[in-house]
Image (cartoon, rainbow, N blue to C red):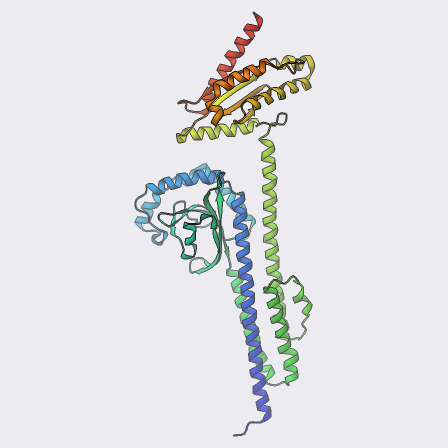
Length: 476
């Protein structure tokens, strides 16, 4: 049977149209998916790193210590695979009360603020238990069905390197489950003040919407292919080349460039395709999706930068609040915070400290006689002497003429000599009345007191006894 040239041309045009259309679908979908996946992974990692930097590591370290104490003392550990079972409920009952701890509530509030600012599915904090190869939830900021502290999951195979390299964190990875849909997950290590990894901040970003948009794009492109096949069957090769093959190639090349990260983001706009058919609709769909993705990425990056700027401003304000404006030593606020830390050390049974109380003599007389400026000179000189003598311990100004030293390390062990040295240096000051300063000193070491304030009161009492003795000697 003979086949006419027209029929052969018709068949050839259809085949060519199908090939070009399919190529456009495959290349466009593949590169856009790859570009979107890489973009989401980068955003998840950046946000996880940012949260790890701003989260309160000290509170997390305290919370982890309490959680691991319970976890290590629990014999029968049950993973979330048995969620809702009597065994799982019995295991989770051991962790009751952790959510009421102030550390948990503070970190939860911080995570939810970050979560509300960013368009993410969930931010949470986890710890790794190397012996059991367990992945333990500490704080989950999810608004619905959060995992309570203590929930245990096995570590995925791709993250087993964490067991030997905790600083690695959780490189971003994408999962698709029935319970959570499409998610990109990343985790960053949180370090304590000694540079040790204590836990990980985790970020889940839902990809369901973008996956649906990609699917619509693929379906649209496929539908266009079918329509083009019908149109091509009744048109000439010239029309096919001009209005179908060429526009699809342009779109395909643009998506390839976009996914490759080329800087010219306006390339899709410069195409200006005006075929007046489904190709033009497809072009606008792709252009809109690219602009939507760019807008989402820019918004996420701007939000992250704003969060970093807010953190920096908060750090600056905190540093100013913890420094005495006149002397540069710790302020009353810093002293109160240090006393809380000492109380916590006492509760944990590892307290080893002392408190020195120093009170400048005759400050009111100096102010009344020579003015407050000279009084301030006397304060700063006394403070300098205290810092020079107790060089290994933090110094705080808690009142106009009152200073406190928290004895640590060598100063703690050498307090008797330092007490004598301070009295000697003070006694040898010379010059004008605001330069020849005098001060009373008293110290007390922690023994079995119930709070740091009790140690302070002992030191304060001894200081005032020394002050009274000094004034009596002067009067006699």
